Length: 148
Image 1: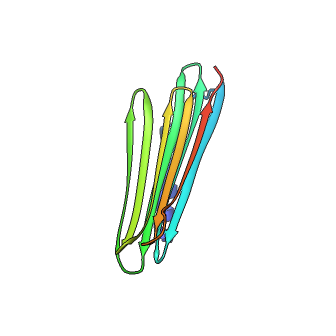
Image 2 (image 1 turned 45 degrees about the horizontal axis):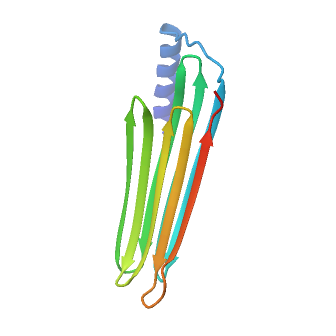
């Protein structure tokens, strides 16, 4: 590990002295962050998702970031989780889904997060169910509109 850090330090030193980067910084005219998360649990199953995003609006446009993740667990059953992130010139979108199933018992969570222009939005839905009982559901939505 020490050797690897030494090589990295030398490489960084060479890169910064031989090829100095000139980066012009700009101040943000408006900034915003948004995020939601949720967990569901029933019996021996659980599922959780989270999504967060941030953006900085400048005179030259916007700089944005987005992140999302999900996980599921079951003591004896099936689990599934997936995360997708899509980017195009107009927006950033992320979605995470997680689900755990053990016979008739299940837990699931889904989070969608989006940055489009001056609007940030995140929503999370959760649901859990035990056989013979009503499902327990919840939804959380957060929306941020940046000033122009």
